[in-house]
Length: 283
Image (cartoon, rainbow, N blue to C red):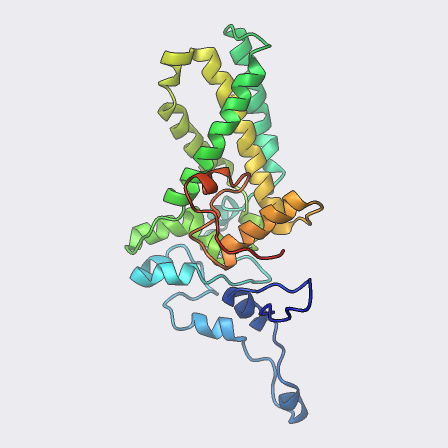
């Protein structure tokens, strides 16, 4: 587990969070069993959580603000639970916090097609569409990096900023294997996409409306790839070196160093902005 078996080609180091997660599956000690002692005691990570004011058995969103300056430390100590955490008391509100991965292409795929068709109807030549869509996809990778690094990993300590951060991205670091909330709910994604639409409006001045529509369709298509890739990195099984590397780097981000590996679909911008991890491990 520590990677000390230097003679083994399969040896690789595990982070402190991996050891912490391992403790959650501890049943007990053989000596305790032989003495007939109760082995159903909560595991160490669960006990460690008790030093904070957050009760993991109650809805979390409106609790995390009370952590104050301790929030950052708490949220970056991941735990793995059999059942996903509850966010709200309301069943209706709780329902809208969960999204199946298939909903992403189902909701946004038609929008991609509509934007591409609108660009063509506005005068964009079909021969130019691949270039502008590819450009939009490339721009998305930069937006993905900026959002992840500066918005999703902003430092907070106030009640409402902690609450907002937890709802936006903090929960994913606290509960990285919660598959019900691994992709963006369409409502939240829609708000971000509308903001990006208005921020990129100046493109119309330089490139024209059809080009912007085509670029946006390519960027939105890349967003779909981003969310599905993210889901795969958590629950899929890599079958080639590229997917193994992406998964290793993403799990390093969750369990080893949250200040590196902000890219999900590509680590190009991590290398450009010097947030590519310096350590090298085997997946």
